[in-house]
Image 1 (tube, rainbow, N blue to C red):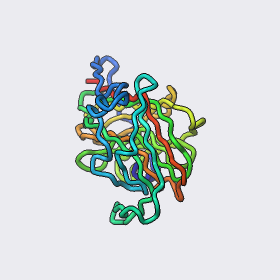
Image 2 (cartoon, rainbow, N blue to C red):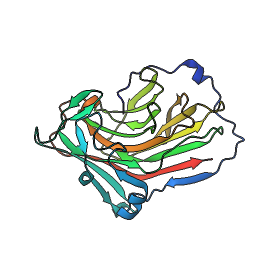
Image 3 (spheres, rainbow, N blue to C red):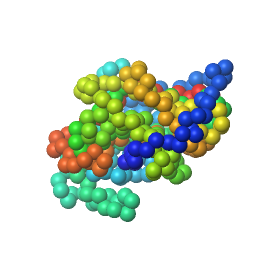
Image 4 (cartoon, one colour):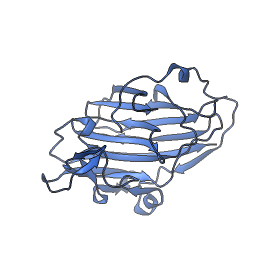
Length: 264
């Protein structure tokens, strides 16, 4: 969710072998597809808001009231709603030493589990689900992991920044970034996202293979991400990197069939 400076990573990362196909790893489901089915299952896996609070780097302040669960699709659907608030009705947020005027109340959820990729080659996590995301100016939904004890690491598993496209990004530093924007047709429909994060053979770095609707977009690399705990966040931020002004009407970001699995 940090606004990317789209520079490719050092070429040396691209030369690192991924992992041996002979390695047999056990799959364990960490967050099941049913986690949005009802409040009891949801509360076992998710907390409202960001891990650090209600504010981040956009014009939306997060509130539990903007998080809804709908059980009617079987596994349940998470809906985050951004609602415009009257000018001056909210205290400004602060980020990076700057004040940000709050123009929306919106929703964010963060996983209770922290995710740490181990050093065994090929071990790691699959982060996947189906998303219906707004793509208009001023709307900034995202599905991402970021460091628990400092930044980076960060992998934007999927991000939409008001351009009509979807973005996949990996940050090694604020200037060493791989950012890929691709077409995102029919945003009114659900689209599947799967990101496979795996330890590389050097035991220090990770690969992140991004798939959209079952098609591989590309593989990116995170330097030194092994052993670093990461938060998992689903949020509907507004304005910021997605431009302004944002919409006057309510904006919805929906997620269903989300699953996180580990391979160890």
